[in-house]
Structures are given as structure tokens and as C-alpha cells.
View 1 (cartoon, rainbow, N blue to C red):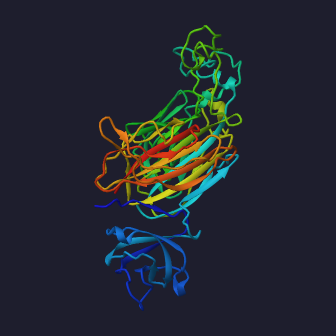
View 2: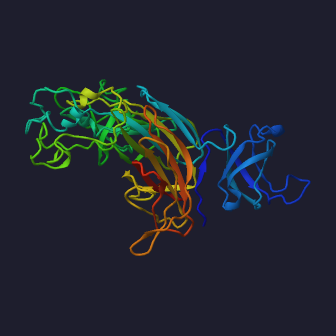
Length: 496
């Protein structure tokens, strides 16, 4: 089979098609080099969709899929400038962009200050679409911040709950919150499952339920025996066998192994399951605390406090801010028009220092957030996500991409350049031979580009398709002719 993945427009509407005819090769029925598609064409009467750009997906014959201009429309037909159409009866979709031509493929938002209610984007999807969410944000970091980590908050050994005996003699450091990551939610669906038991110990709530959740999921409890738990929205810390845990402030311990069953107590998750494919958090700021303060020259210790560099330093400083890149993937999206939200505020914690960060923006220097929609895509290639820094030309992520899908893959790359825009989409980077050598390969195509809000950095998101039967090793890259330092992230998505 052919590679079925199609990059879909960012905005507009999705129409249902049932068939298409052979391409027109002669007048007078329709313009030469066009194909007539039949379906439910809402808003198409009297050529109302003329000159709109349509992306066709779902036909098993690849000649019928792709992006085309509408030449004529009725309530039942679209005439598009596809000169290779092949007669076929099959369910398919026609997505049109409201932005004219060329088509806009990324729905984007940029905020210099993160919204306390989240940074939201509206998406329109068909059943089974794959959504890729990308956040590129800036976090502030002062040299003193890097002196933190486990110090000065040393826990008292054997204490329960954990006691922090070292006085808070210093302001909290950003590294204290390095594990914290933004999360993605959406309003596309709501899933509930019965809660059978709860327990609280050391200010950690454990909820026994069959609801499928992941770290960072937002869960609301209802119908509980405990009034203090009803209506509470929890942020999942971790999951176990048939349960999840969350921070919850409570004096003492509590256990209830018999929550109401008729009607049942419920745990409700708003939205679908977004998977964090990978991230690079605060580029070049990973100072490892060995001594506080760091030793003078001549001292010992690894990391950035080694002999020749006693104090922390970073090369990716953008006016006191450091970039972070996050990528999430939602497979098998539900159909509809709904809101996708980047929740980039630190969540409340029970103990210092986590409790000190609640309500503060993770990206305090601004954030760019975008959603990209693919149809015909399957799962992310296992272990494919790779991200790192480079100044090579071509510029690629540190680990090559190994594809396995018999029908082909979509290779997606995100490039962020520190101080300029002298870079461009590259190639899929076919590697061959033993040892493998770079041989170029097909060109990558730009999905979106822009300036990172709050800085002089620029970014490009690009994609390329591998053909059916071409499982192998690839090295998607950007052209970086001036050798500027870049962050590059790459991963693969299988064709369905």
C-alpha cells in the first residue's frame, strides 16, 4: 500500500465525500485537467467554494488525494484541479482552508505572558486524525538559580511526611521546578469511570479507578462519600495498577475502601490522551549541583563546576531567558471542532519547594504554541524522538530516525535558531552503507515558521514522507549555511 499520511489544513471545515470521477480530459463537461468529487458539500451552492483550497484524504487510490483548488461547487459536487483523478467509490473527506492559497497548515498562538487559564487553539478534526502539538517557550534563569537543586531543601532522613529541616535561607531556584512540565488538555471528549476506593497518606491521595490517565492529567471527582473530595480537580502525579496519585493536603491519614456504587462515585477526565513525545528543558542550563557555592579553580567536581569553570554559564542565553521545546502527539482524535489548551502554569504542590511555584508561569518569557493535523497516520515510531543542539550544516538531531512502517512514515522536525533566520528546510537525510553515509534524500517541506515571541530566535517546523516499503534509517535536517547554533527535534509517525 501507499503512504496514506496527508498534512491537513489548519482551519476551515471538513466535508464528507462518497466518490470521485475520472479526471476530465476534454470539454464541455468541466475544465480540462480537473476531477469531480461527489458528496455532501455544505455551503457549496452556486460556486460558493470557488477558489478555495481543498485537501482530499481517505481514498485508497493516492491519485485522488492531495491539495487542490476548487474550480466549481454545488451542494453535491466539488470540481478540483486534479488532472490525475481515478474513478472510485469510497468514503473520504475534503477539508478546506478559510485562508485561501497557499494553505495554512499550523494553527498557532503566541503569548508574551502565559494565560492563567491556558493558551488555547481551536481545531477541527475528522475521526482518527493525528494531532501534533508543539510548544516553544522561554524560561528565565539567573546564575544564582542554578545553585539550587536538592540544596538548600535537604529532606530530613526517615521523616514522614517529609520534613525540610534546612532553613529557607535562599530564594527558590528554577532548578527546583525542572521536573515540572506543561500539559495538554482538550474539550473533544469526556471520559468517566467508577471510583471504588480512596486513601490519603502524607498528603498524597490515591484513587482506585479503571480510568486511563497519565501524569499531568486533570481529573475531577464526583459522587464521593467524602464531601471534601466532591468537585475537586486533581493533577495526576503518577499511576499504578488500577489507581492514580495526586497531591492533596490533609491532616493525618484516611482510607475508604467502599465508595458509593449506585450511583457510582466517578473520576472524570476531560479530553483525550496526549502523549509527550519528548522535550528539551532549558537548553544549556543543566548545571549539576556538587558544591554550593561551586568550588574555586583548582577544585574538583564534574559538570559545569569543573576546574576551569567554577561558576555556571550557558551559551543559549536570550536576554536572560532560555528556550525549551515540547512535542505532544494525540493519535486517533475524535471528530469535531474543539479547544486544545496548553496549561503552562506550575501546579500546586504540598511541600516546599513545589508549593512555592503554584500559579507561576512555566514559560515566563513567552510561548509559541501550535497544532498540526495529519490524516492517515498511525502511532509514533517507538523511541524515535530525538532532540539536541548542533551547529553543523546540515543541522540534525543527535539520533537518526529508524522507520519500520511498511506503508511509509512522516518525518517531522522542529528547528530553533538562536539569533537569526539564515536556515531553511533540508532533506529527509537518507543514510546508507556500512558505516552509514549521508546521501541527501527527498526534500523536507516547511509546515510553519516564525519568530519566537520575546526573543530574536526563529523557528521552522518541517515534514517529509518516506515511501511505501522504504523502512530504514533517515536523518531529517535543516540547511544551516552559516553554522549557527540550533536546537533540532525530530521524530517519525507511521502511516496507517
